[in-house]
Length: 129
Image (cartoon, rainbow, N blue to C red; front, side):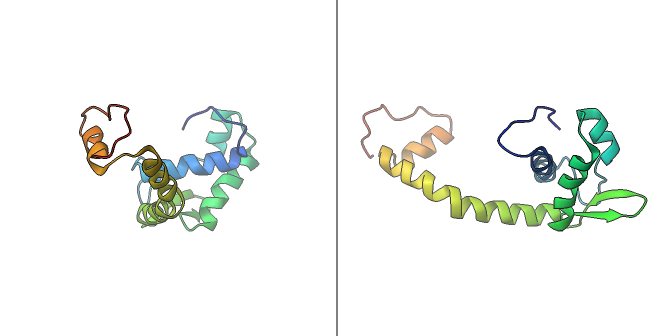
């Protein structure tokens, strides 16, 4: 986890988001234990209640389960559910904005494919191909 916190979101939310990213990236897999609240708090100089609040959000979202006396563990299927939610959020919230910008810039599918394959970008004239 990155120890640099920004001022845009509460730290507990940033911590939650970082654990989600670790699950999506496969760093944490189904059944893996999360680092203990005490260890995270000590390592990043956070209040243990802040760490616990971030972890509790994951529990509330059914991504992590508490095992009394043992810690918190990634739920089976957490990555699959996260991917489904992230894809839906991207397609509903972000993709329309991307499409609008692509259209406004006059980019074609060929332009986008060319750049994705390592080719050069449009010559700057903004013509559709």
